Image 1 (cartoon, each protein chain N blue to C red):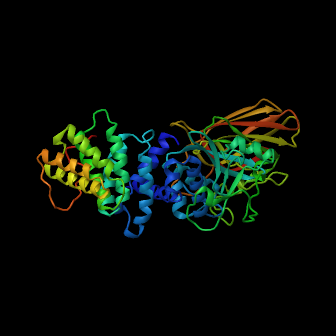
Image 2 (image 1 turned 60 degrees about the vertical axis):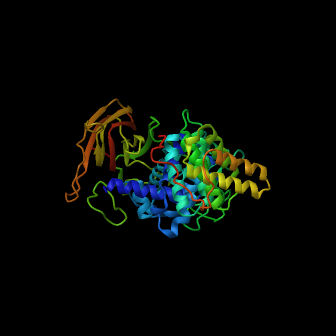
Image 3 (image 1 turned 45 degrees about the vertical axis):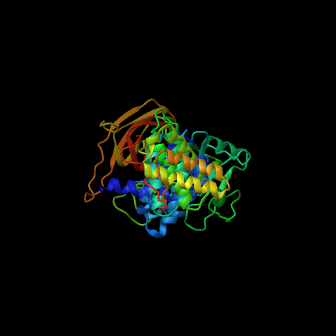
Amino acid sequence: MTDEDEQTSAMRDHAIRVLHALSCDKLAFGDDLELVAAANAYVHRRVRRVHQSVADSGIEVLEREEGVCGGMVLATRDLLNELGLQGQLAYALGGDVAHSMFEVQTESETILVDPYHGLIFVDHETGRGLGLDDAVAAASAARPSVLFVRRQGSEALDLAEAYARADEDSRVDFAFPRNFIDLDGYGLAGSGFAEVIEVHLSLGGVLGAPDWREPREGEPYPYSALAHERKADGSHLSWAYILGSTANGYNVQHVYRIAGLTPGQSFAIRTSFANAYGKEGELPVVSYRQLSGGGGKHNAKLEHTNRRADEAFVPQVIEARFVSETDSSLIVTYARGDFVLIAIEAIAP
Amino acid sequence: MSPESATRRFHLLASLSGSAYDHAKLAEAEHLRSAALLLAERRDLIPDSDAIPFLRAMIKDARTTGMSALAAQAFHTLIARVESLDEPDIDWLAQMNFSLAMTLTTGGLPGAETPMARAIEILKAKPDALGDDLVARLANAYSDLLSSEGRDAEAEEVLVWSLNRGSVKSDADVEVVPVAPAEADVQ
């Protein structure tokens, strides 16, 4: 049996465990909301939250029984696919850290699930699922629209057994609708829309760890420091370490606002990349355009990242130089490819 | 429920069999196979090409493990499916109705009269749909059932029909026959 066969077989076993949660009638005649809820509860109750856990696949998360929101969403997606249901990864930025969820499209409704927090989004009046847009709107209207899964146990449960309308377990790590208020952005993977991450910098300012070369305390990965940067108001910057079209289907672009400049002054945006992958054999390309404070433009082609495990880590560094006509500049990136950054700096060349 | 979701769910459930699980888990597997059986009743979602082989396998499994009620439910679903095919295999239908009736009878379950009557109805139209020994067993069982309900005239009529057909009443125990002969495959 190949590794792929084993993974398929393992995911099938997990799917069957999800099905165990439902009565015969619900399995055969029930609507898909029951199935979605059972899968969501299964992932939530099986997978322990482990900070900075990374995984390449949903089955890896389910087998290791640990992950964070991104991995738990991959597990939920793959589990639901195994059960014949499709959907898109969903994200919310701002208000709190970047958060991954999953929006399922059934024949008759759209249902947002959050396996990390053990939530499904349901209109209590109609009993129907809510999609991402609906959930955000419901949060703004302070209308209750969430079912919380109870944490006890590890087996899958059906909707009635697993979920409550209120957070009965008095959890303090999540309080709907906090995650949906003060959003910087939200969206779906594969939607075609770009999520623009606004990054504020002053000359000499550094975000991330441009000197990262190997794992160290609190920074196991090249992008760890940049991923945990905060804005001036204390909220998470989120996704400044991602650029371009990601493997998950997100489209992320950056806007850099540079303050504290002197008219006529030269400056550069220095971006350090841990990974860069082109699409369909093309080299990865980043284009920096000065939309205000001047009209500069800088295009940069990067090499495909294909570092062997025994090679020293060497980031690819791009310095995009501009002249500011005013005391601030706005630089927009357009990225073709999939990039992971370790640092963003505004420097005087 | 979308057809895609139902089909995927059906295949997952249908893939479970007693041999796929150890004995301790057989009951759990049975729960899921029961759900697959219910899904197989959904002709709007599960096509014959998927449902019929599953139902045949399930009947075999259920009868092997003594689960007469489950086997009977699968028989009912399978017969309904085959009855509505464009060109149903009449011989197979006769045999399935016979086997369903025997499954119900030997399992002490109600409802045997309907498949018995259906099998005889088919035999009257197509006398060679069952072999003589099976026809005799069917007639005996049906006659006994009718007699037990005080319907002696009807019981006698069945026996007369059977004798006129050339079959001979036998005291042999009624046994179930395979779900379908190998050559009677409608797929």
